[in-house]
Image 1: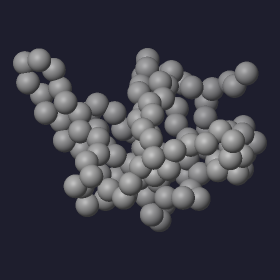
Image 2: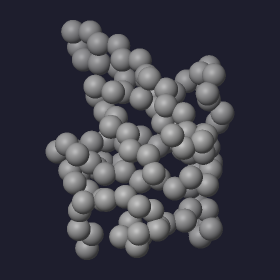
Image 3: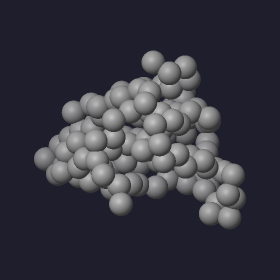
Length: 114
């Protein structure tokens, strides 16, 4: 485990119409604030390894300063992100991008980037 990372099992409410997937409520004990919520669509084959998804529906809280990434292992996946401030494209130092192939983080990404 990486210090500061929290994994919270989330509630699903299915009925005859479909399923509601709870993500985050302002009344949750782990809620702080957020500036935006966005989704990332992840293609198949596109440190701590988690296998999360429909059958392991969880919220993962990653503290500031902890490098993170994701790759898909099913045909497609959708990842929702809710940072506590809105991302500002003009703030170059707001996010540090790490080349996954430079070996600074020992993880086998197992895909070819172009």
